[in-house]
Image (cartoon, rainbow, N blue to C red; front, side):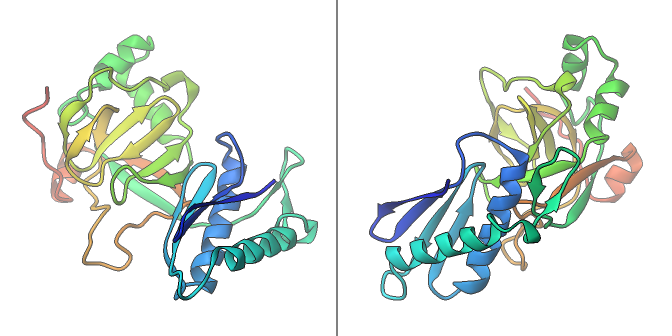
Length: 243
């Protein structure tokens, strides 16, 4: 059941669920795409998350009621019509959308200070942790925390691990981390508490390019292990100041 509530005179939030669900992520991605395509001039920003979409709009170009009517009409058409859905193996309907992005990752203790401790805690070898992390196909469930920071779900339960109790003051750009069931790549240097297991040398946020980030909610992401020389050739750097 979709709920739409005003947040301020120029913003509203659309609730589509109350818990993380990869099927719900596809619905949120589809609705986000619809809003961006059909109301580009009226909306200032559309921010999808795991279960909701926050919208900022131009009050002189569109109002709350108009957005509400259009969203509910979209829902009636797209979510209740079986002909627009594809039945999957679990007898549930999903909406197919999104591109697949493959990211190179150098998994090594020199760029992943938590790789060895995570392996030890889970009674695994470092190679097993790497295999479990890169064999999954992840879904971009939300984008936030920092521009270009994509929350990806879900890691194999064998390597799911909590954040650090005390965040590090600085995580270098490209760091690949795990926090509970999620994984992500830090697009820029920033503080952070995720368990870091490797580094991706690919730039994931650039304010001077279009798009500024390769990720959209609903996209699929895979990781591909690379060796040290390939990492360095792609512009990767070994971070000497881990604490």
